[in-house]
Length: 284
Length: 167
Image (cartoon, rainbow over all chains, first blue to last red; front, side, top):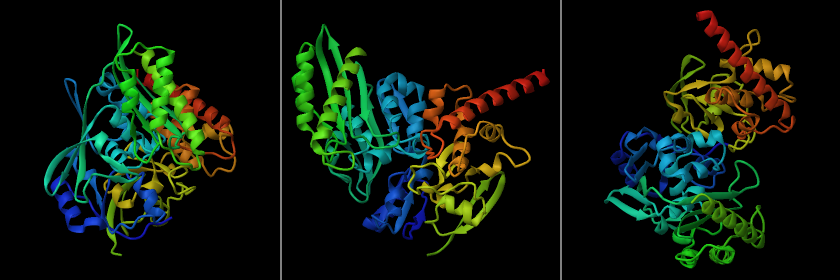
C-alpha cells in the first residue's frame, strides 16, 4: 500500500513547524511516530500534500520532573515513558498503561503527543490524561495556550486544536493513592474493547479523592464525574463499588463495531471498571 | 513528484538513495538497495514481518517513510549473519525448527536480536511478550520461543567464554 504523494519537511525548531502549518493550512499535517497517521495515509483515507516531521525538534522531547510536577514533551515515545524510572516512581500508572499500547515495535516509535493529539477515541493516552487531569500545551501562530485534557476532545478525531497549532507538551501533578489501568482487548496490538483507569485515595476507610476515566467507550474519552461524585467521602464497600460501576457504564456511549455490539461493550466496560476499582483500592 | 536524497547506513555501509518522500522504508530497502530480507506481510504494522533495527530499536519498516530514516543506522537480517556464519539466533532457529514457511522469520530474527540485547536472560513469558508484535501463522510460536530461549543461553555462554579468554 502506497500513500499519495506529498512533500516532506523536517524543521529543527517549533517556530518553523508552526509557520509551515500556517502556510499550508489544511493541506499539511505533522507526523510524530506515524503509527496512526501512516496507516491512514496508505489507505488513502486522508489527503496530505505536505508532511511536517517533528522528530528534528529537540525542545519537544523528553521527560522533566520537578518535585511533583511532571512535564512530558510531545515527541517522547511510549518506550521512553516505560523505561523512565523516575516517572515510574512518581506516576506508575503511565508505565502500566503504556505497556498495554500496541506492541514493542510500535511503542518504540509511537509518541505520547501523537497518541493524545490525534483524537482517536480508541487511543489509551487521552483517557489516561483525563484521569490525571493533565494540561496540554499548544503552540500556534497566536502564541502558546494551555488546554485541559478534559476539555480537549470534541468528537472522534475532532479536538479544540486549531489547524496551525502543534501540541508541544503535556503536564500533570504526580498522582497519589492507589491506581490501575485495565484494558480488555482481543489480542496484543488491538485497541481496547473497553478500558478504564482509576486513581483513588482511601483515608480512615473513606474515599478522600478519586478519578475515573474510560477509553474507547464513546467518541471521546469519558471522564466519569458522576461516578466520582458518588464515591467521594463514602465508605468503600461492595454496594458503593456497584453504584460507581453502574454510574460509569451509564456515562459510556460505545458504538457497535468488529469488537462487538453495544450491549457487549457495556458489559465489558462494567468488568474492566470493577477490576480497575478493585486493584486501585488494593494498592492504596 | 520530486525525488529527494536520503542517506542512511545499512548493515554498516553508507547508502544514498533518490526516492519520493512517500517511499516506505521497507520498499527502499527491498527495491532500491536489494535487501529483501525484510518482508512485506500485512503492510499495516500488525504482522512484524518487516521488522528491522533502526538506531538500536526494533521498528516495523512498513510504517516508516524513507526520509524519516535520514541519518539512521539500519540493520537488516542480511547484516547479522551469513549462510557460512549464522548468527546464534539463526543457528538456534535452525536447530529448534523455529520456522516452517519462513515468511515471518527475518522479522522474528531481527526482533529477537534486539530483544535479547534488551533482556539477555528472559523468561518464556518475557520472550512471548517481547515478540508480541510479530505474527506467525505456521508454528503456533512454540518452537520460535524455544529457539529464542536457546539463543539466549548460547549468546550468554559465548559471552562467558570470551570473558574467560580475556582473563
